[in-house]
Length: 319
Image 1 (cartoon, rainbow, N blue to C red):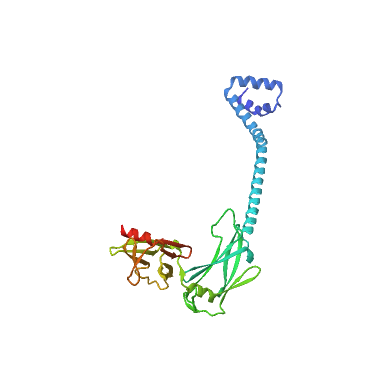
Image 2 (tube, rainbow, N blue to C red):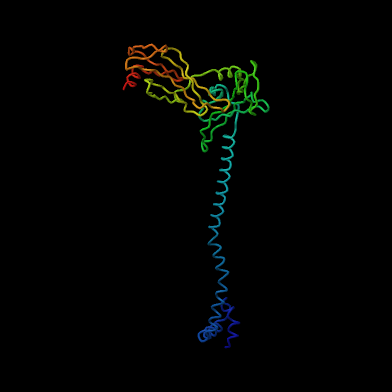
């Protein structure tokens, strides 16, 4: 039987539609014809491909279902995260006028600069001092919650004034402005309004004040003429010191902050005693004074009082 006839019968043969006689003839031909066997093999592969594709689809169908579940879970997670983030942003971003009982107010005087500090009593909130438009003497104290994911050390709110003298204050624009008895800083809380007198703050700021011992370096200086000098030098820029004598053996160290930028060459102050020997000191009138050992120089600072033995100074000077 010719190859053309066999190849025409092969589709029916593959589908099982040929007779037994035809099957025997086809199979005998296939044993002897390599080309027809190859043709049959190729035909069988083409017939199996759709079946394999369908089988593959059935095999991957469960994975597609899992994939859809995963994407739904991812979408739900993103939605939940967005809702949580939005809720937290609203919760921690919301601010309100804080009540006066929740705030500690203090004033710090550095020279003629007064800084007013508002410190929250609750460690979980931070404060803001908002000035009214066009009126810097009206301040609203507001609060917001501290986000635990974005902690900040700046929990306090501040406002400040710089006074030129007891009747003049510098505006935020740097202009000198006269103040009167009626001028006040109005502080708006959530429950009440508090007023601070600008005149009283100016008087306190311009009053001479004792220096803090932390801002002063004290040293001893032995001189050739028998004098022992005690020197007080400021540690801070812009600070000048003077000493006010309150008694024979008592002085106060006074601080002065520069208002003009013209600092003196020597910003410190000294006090000294002239000793003729380890037991004798020269008085202000030049007369010799015998030391009893009980004489003490008292140096007063803002935060403490220091005592220095005059007898000890005399002995060190005599060495």
